[in-house]
Image (cartoon, rainbow, N blue to C red; front, side, top):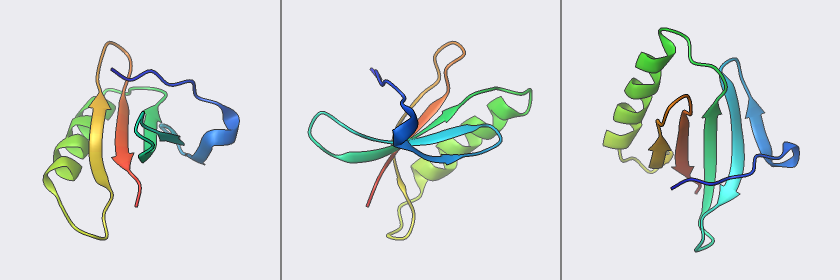
Length: 82
């Protein structure tokens, strides 16, 4: 279960579809959370493609998928930071 309070000072990047926040897990592991603010008709397909693509790739120069949320209107992707 993902429970985060998104605050302005934790923003890494703001883009056209949402923002990327820095955060940490309960064990102190640093993560980046990409939170989509709006889902356009093609946005749902892009979200699923991103989760599938990043989740299946393992390379030292790429972020690693930690998890995602696709509940109701909420769309978030969690990446491990390195």
